[in-house]
Amino acid sequence: MPQANPPTTRRIRRDSPTSGTPYGSRGPSKHQLVFARGYGYRDYGRKLPFTEHTVVPIASNTKLFTAVAAGLLVEEGKLDWDPPIRQFVPSIEFHDDELNRAVSIRDMLSHRTGITRHDLIWYKSEFTRPELFERLKYLEPTQPIRTKFLYNNMMYMGAGHVIELLSGKSWEQFVRERLLQPLGMTSTVFSIADMTKQPDHGVPYTERRDSDEIYRIPYYEEAAGIGPAGAINSNLVDMSRWVIALMNGGTIDGKQAIPARVIRETLAPSISMPNATLESRGWGELLNSAYGMGRWIASYRGHLLAYHGGDINGFHSQVSIMPQDSIGVLVFVIGDHAQPLYNVVSYRVYERLLGLDPTPWSERMLAIRKKGKEAGKQARAQAGGDRIAGTQPSHPLPEYVGEYEHPAYGVITISPRGDSLLMAFHKIRLPLGHYHYDRFDSPDDEQDGKWSLNFATNPQGEIDNVTTSLDEAEVTFTRRVPEALTALATLRQYAGDYETPTGGKLRVVLRQDGTFGIEFPAAPFQALQPWRPHQFRLKEFSDTIVEFEVSNGRVTAMKQRDPGGVATFLRKQSAGSTRAPITTTSAR
Image 1 (tube, rainbow, N blue to C red):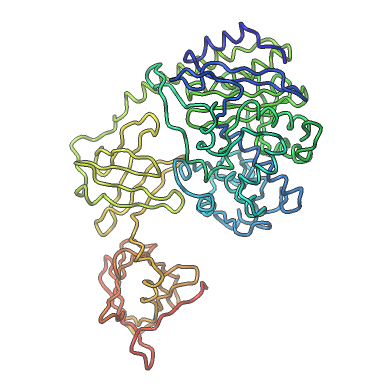
Image 2: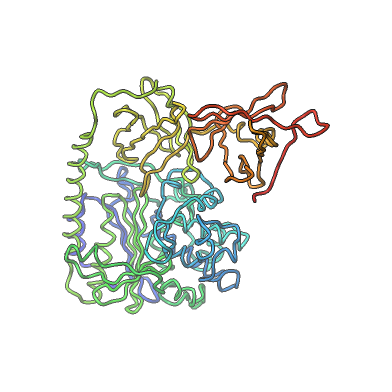
């Protein structure tokens, strides 16, 4: 690749949203690396230069490593691309039977499961990979499988854990031994802790929302659980070896490091996307995009382009190749405000090498950036227009305090904070102020955004749950009950036969799958949810309370209280027994 045209470089840097924006560009030809240069600073505060050896997070450019790693297991016969994944890993569970019968590893790696992102399950959380894997079953699809592209980091986490279960090694160990070491990628690591041990590493900065001030932000260090979707940290030197292998059917330095068939599979289009985004602006350079596995495939001005971006707090990257033209381009950028540079630089390099007239990408992206920044400023200035003045919370503030849980997203903790409240969700900590009625809002934080929490009262008059907008939908967190109330030993004491006031029979059961509730002879099973000591609520009827009476350590009766009154059911004792029997049944 020839040296970058100095006027081109100066124009890109002139049009960057901030002077000193750091980025690195490296371009392999089909068999060798021919150009590398860093611009700006890897550490803006200390004015340390960005070089081709600067190690930075590559975020979602990790995904292709995971897809290729899965392909190695396909080659070994331990996995296959298209049969249901549960044929190989029965422990993986999805939301419903249809998904369990259908989802393949290709579906997971091509974002076509019909399940949307749910990023706030993992973002800033400390969930382990197995804990995240267990949460897949709570993610409800929003589209039929294989009908729409819906980007999903959780599916890549799931694919990474599949690799672990089938290989007997951690995803990190498998990728290191089977990909990084054969490719000679000696500076590539899987954690921020290991990255910052290297003397030449990037430091995250970004621009203030309402000014041009550049400020340092924290590293994103909670990537271990979600690792297969975006935990790799690398530099231009190492990643150029990855790109050379991709362009040469898996060979590098005369050796077959990756089976060529695996490379071809990742390039095979799995699901298409409309051209609407660019065409709506009147831009026709990038057309007919489809997603393979771990990368997009499109036509850029008539040339086949395979590419993927990577974005995490303060760091952005693009890895791309034109396989038929034997060109590869890597661009790493520091600064959230400068993220568009990886497209600007990549496209300009391709156009120059292909002898194409330049497209004004820098001017386009700069205009979008300026308009977006101003629009955001105006939107924030109008926040609060729907606030109803003169309202009060329905309960004293201490009654909002507690832990609220969702089976997939985890726990929101509300704590007292002087005359207001404090919200904790994963590692996000924000104060909450009263907005109106039972709604409490946080300040609009530059990093964590603005949160609005709406509390709800149950039929018993207590603050019972809180709803907030996460990812693409509202999510409701229910007040958490003490673990002692849900313990199996606690639930077993209530199991047994009871007699209705009219002489009928019913049975309280603890099933082998852990569900607890009431079985009627000729009525649906009624699940019971622990509420208070010896008290439960019907899952389907929150206005109904079931209370067990205990005398001298024995359960003697069950009372059901609903808006219509109270019914008492006496516990039946087994013949010759002085204590209540324990009844445990399997699901019927």
